[in-house]
Length: 82
Image (spheres, rainbow, N blue to C red):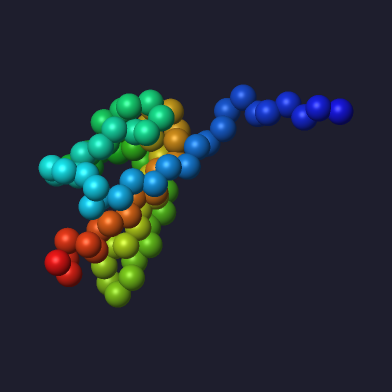
């Protein structure tokens, strides 16, 4: 018996802020929706989880507001120690 794949699948992507130039705005890897750290309305994304290490944000997991892809954002601490 062949199993049918579910129609809707949540994709997981990782974005490293160190690799992004500018203010940290990036496009969703799946649908291209622009996601900006300055957008506090959560119109284009929803914060799903945060990881804090030594009282500093280490990782942020968001869900794209358009396609619902799961995106893990890393690289927050890189600029602090440099």
